[in-house]
Length: 138
Length: 108
Image 1: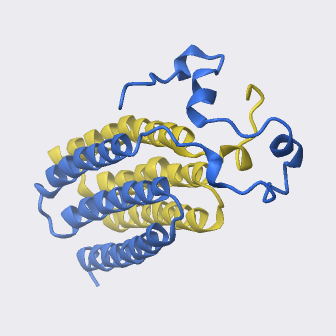
Image 2: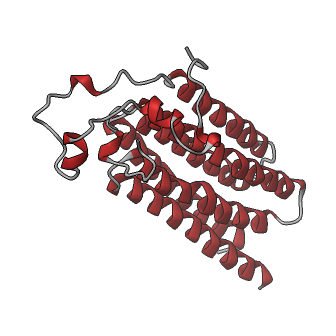
């Protein structure tokens, strides 16, 4: 058994494991309750694909596949940023929640002053670096 | 003989990288909220990619390919915290029930 066949078996095993992990992340993105879960899973699938392409470039001895991995990294970043800025809207507030169904772990906060908007809380934060322009995306 | 030593170094580094990815996927399934899942997703973006890319650089030798792989990991380390930060900002802005999951001292 020469070294090159050992390398081939090693990289094939790594590719199979990465493919199984990609399927698991896809299942997580299907059952994710919020939209940010799905965007996060898209980001993770992008990272797994980048690793697979770099392993494949060593396995097939093709140097140009690393360029494809670089371009895929750029497109993955662009995908996440564009999807996040599409869904970056201020929330309409928790009016749809019925009153009797308060949260069990923090009852005093739900009973006392109520839950304010996420946008208000962000703009009222003391750190000016975390201030969000209110009409940036509207 | 030195080829086999290089092969075992590559195998060990690749197995550490795959283990980081397995931990990432386990954390994705075990954590309960998006901001916790981002913590788990950061493992694969930094350490998993680092070890896999390091093993591939050792395997391919002193080439132009190694330089491009190094450029890839520098690019991923710059862009992954950016996307995670932006995504967490979107989550904090759009979730109306944030107080169930996050306890903040400066909350009004």
